[in-house]
Structures are given as C-alpha cells and as structure tokens.
Amino acid sequence: MKNGEKMYGLIAGRHDLPVCGYILDSVEDVHDFTGIRRAIGKFLETHCNLRFEYRMAVNQADDSSILVYTGGRLDVIVTGLTSVTAALVAACAQNGVDLTLWHFNRDTGGYEPQDFWF
Image (cartoon, rainbow, N blue to C red):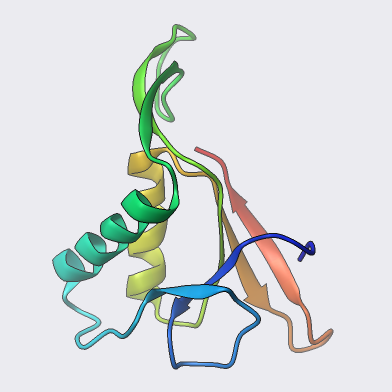
C-alpha cells in the first residue's frame, strides 16, 4: 500500500485495519443483498465523486464514447464476507469506480492488491 492513499475497510469491527474509515458500520444479515448494495451505493455517492462522463462503457461493443457513470478510485481492505465483497465489486462496476481490493497475505504480513478497472 502506498503512503497517503485513502484506504477503507469493508466492515467496521471485524479486524483492526490500517484504514481511514469503513464502508459499512456493520452487517446484520449477510443475505440482505439489497440492503448491503444500497448501503454501499450511499458510500460511493458520498466518497467517490460520482458523475456522468463521456467515455467507453465496461461492456461496450465498439469504441465510441457514450455518457456513463464514473467516479474516483477506491482502495478497500476486504475482511472475508463474500456477499459484501461481491456487492462492492458490482456497485463499483455499475458506477464506474475503479476499485482495488487489498487482501491480507499471512506469509508476508502485508496486503496484496487486486485491481478492477471500470
């Protein structure tokens, strides 16, 4: 992880993480997919500078520019709840937010990046 980056944790209280804040305070029901997605969407709206911009879409069949959602980059340390991580990836894709998931590496004691560029 680079110094000075805004790093967020996925869910507060699960692990002590080197982050500036958390996307979700808690998750009551890991199967409440709609509620989780809604909460993540609110976070993206307030923290990722969501806007419209002309460019290529993720799943576009040609190279013309169209009006799409886009946003700033997001770095998140994931904490193991697959349904929440999947909802985060989907929400970032839908909103054009480039995402880097950081996974703890037990062998090195550090974090390894997994990039998703939308």
